[in-house]
Amino acid sequence: MSGHERIAAAIRAAGKGGSPALIAYLTAGFPRRADFGAQLAAVAAAADVVEIGVPFTDPMADGVTIQRASMAALAQGVTLRWILEELTRLGPIRTPLVLMSYLNPLLAFGVEALAAAAASAGVAGFIGPDLPLDESSELAAALAARGLALVQMVTPVTEPQRLAALCAGSQGFVYAVTMTGTTGRNVAVPDEVLAYLERVRERATLPVCAGFGIRSRAQVERLTGHVDGVVVGSALVEVLERGEDPTAWLRALRG
Image (cartoon, rainbow, N blue to C red):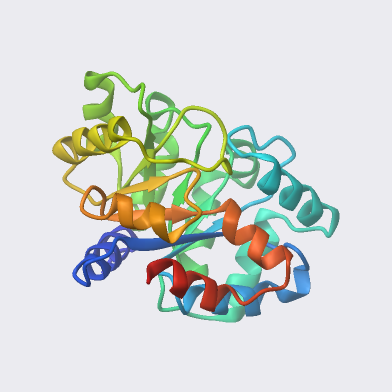
């Protein structure tokens, strides 16, 4: 099974339990680089897909929590190359892994070399929040040759024609951003957000997962039936920062 098929299959399998799949985000190397392997294992034990953030100096889509985590990880020497080497050293993880990275580190690595290294490291796909669909063909082709996903993001203000193109161009799942702005803010999930998510699901043939601002069990319950999965980022990074048990926290979020 290819990487992008593993992602979609994991999300769909989780949904059979009646609740949305959990896609759990952690910033690689935060709070401590030495703990990355243990944290990844703990998060993977409770999540259906793990999204690993590649630290970057200007994470424009992220709020203060992930900005802080990125700066701390960078200060410890965490890089894209280090992450791929660590994943290779750690060996296979049953839970599909997706790297979330801004474009500069990917281009600096080289798209062909990146695809090869990612496949060897057990990565199933990538999310590039600052890579427009219209400019993604080179990276998408390199990843596709290795069976890896390039996940596309949509927002509440995405026009219908653009929405259709993004849904058609995504692999693994469609990332439905719940609001305009940055990550980390609490979202009440009003009716208009649910209507927007339903529009995305009507267009998508892949699972649709909602992200940005998901922090509570109440939000997950509110989204149940309207999405196939939820992406939990800043709140989980804060759990790790406080030294709490991420496995227990994620299981409580699922209920």
